[in-house]
Picture 1 (cartoon, rainbow, N blue to C red):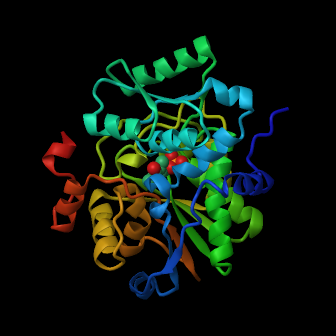
Picture 2: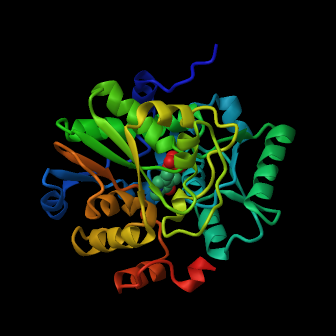
Picture 3: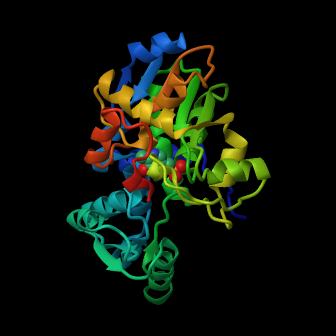
Length: 332
Ligand SMILES: *Cc1c(COP(=O)(O)O)cnc(C)c1O
């Protein structure tokens, strides 16, 4: 019988496996956010991770969990964002070939960034779905190993190592705030945190525009939602109607899901820059956004995961200069 959940043991094994591949990122107390929340607030600076997001943890664990024969076949995924970067980097580091499939609509700078990290880029089709069909074909015809961005036990266990570090760095935590999209990060972190201390609250943070996991949790089963542009572009995308792990883990392990608006995300990015001296992408700023807007209640210390920093610097500058939400060219 298939084990439905990723366990604390799996996450501890992942931590040992990837220790040489990832940074143990710092935890910084935020005086400004602590004043605001009335309890101590700690920022997990995971946007400083190699490749600019936590996704390297899951990608590294997935590749290091393969047999050498499997590794020799190479890995493949369709992500053009943080998962694609992480998989490219992790594969190169293990001497494996990563193929990242992309649609023709993906901008040149994203293509060259993934190539720079050492991956082969396969361009085909006119949508993300068609890029995914290319992934399925490579896996079926050539046996290339698919490493999906969240719904995969080794990926979830890798992301969960962040939860182990947080509990080690601030043992007296009451609440952990986790950005939530496909739910690999939230599932892994919640499994680690609650495995170590079951009373700790874990809260997912999501966007108004196209929050597939929230809609699915509300419906009681995976559903599709319309996707709209968001400042937190790393939080877009569905959870898969055939979701096998992250839906059930988020349903059973998360204490709450909080939705933040585009304005609140912009304010989160601004606060991170002006008060904490950190550059964050939208998805990395949702925890700060929720704290600033007063949507989080906690009787004691809060940890906030700053999950990534891969934002277009022109967009970042416009937000810092006061652009409220998505400028026209991003919203188009
Ligand atoms: C992927 C990603 C998330 C969301 O992670 P899921 O596992 O899909 O929920 C959050 N922040 C950043 C920066 C990401 O790249």
